[in-house]
Image 1 (tube, rainbow, N blue to C red):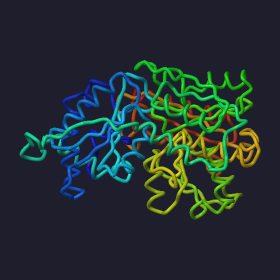
Image 2 (cartoon, rainbow, N blue to C red):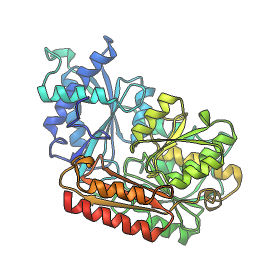
Image 3 (cartoon, rainbow, N blue to C red):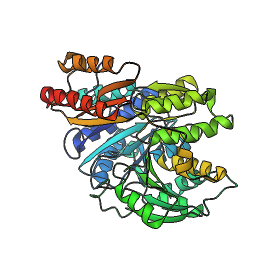
Image 4 (cartoon, rainbow, N blue to C red):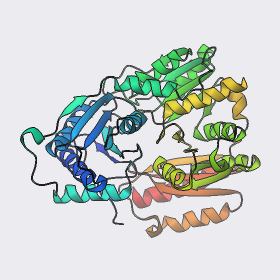
Length: 453
């Protein structure tokens, strides 16, 4: 398979109004997507594509460009407006659309934007489809002749798309349970969930305090949300709340704060919800799927509980692919992407929060109490800016990485990888001695900085 140039590990992403996230390229992407779908789906119906976006100022510009490309090839665009990424996955499948497009750069700052494309079933499209879109865009090889007259496509809004998603979300929560008696602080990150998330928790009777739900196009993820939980932590402690929930800009992931102010990431959610599903006999093949970034402590804990852990490359799409391929129904990432495949086809921060809250309510325990099941191995994660992304094996630092792994054998591990969405290389080291792994991580990071900075 040829290396992709337009698509990264999670769609197309970059600075808005610079290539490739600029109108001329995105018109071509829209045209190519319609052409591809006609080829791959092999049906004679008009191609129908759902588009949703987060709250970035560049969203409408990108939406218009994609819509123009799709309509120019005779496709029909159905606009969902501002809605979380998993909401588009749900609506694409629910409307029996041929594809769904999310306009978002997830946790990035407002200057960036991007697109993710979902298949008719609500899963992210495969690499083969991305490569074909790239080839068409590069060659400008689209369906010919271009439609005219009544055959030109059109765009229209989906009536109450957020409302449909809200009802879906509430229906993932146990029918005989409510959130009554729980005081929840919710951080919407000024992002795509700023409308739907508060409605869901309020209608399930939570005592709710909402933060960062006034987007202005430029404040998405701005020192708030899943990447910046410090303010949420402060409010949880001040308000003596039971739990804090921080979503990211497109609400496909979450980070939690327990009643004592401790940060609880995706590993804790997998531990707590995985055990509950296992006890109920609802954990398919008694297996959880996680990435190489998940803490070694999670692996040890699941082993004690006789639950298997399958690891994948970093990225929620790889988690979902492994789940679908092997028939598993629960998995996720340490960063807070959790996939409950019985409910939705991709990571969903609100679904994840509801499943965890259901466990809290059923067991009558706090998040702090339930979190004691998992004791993490000390972990250090460093992000280093890079000018180029050379193959790791070609670097002089690669020998140092291998030597570090040998030094930690049987008592820790090192993982070095490039970010799929930013010009960063990440160094993660786990081990029993925090001071030791901090020094080892800094040593590797300095070498990488000299070689790639």
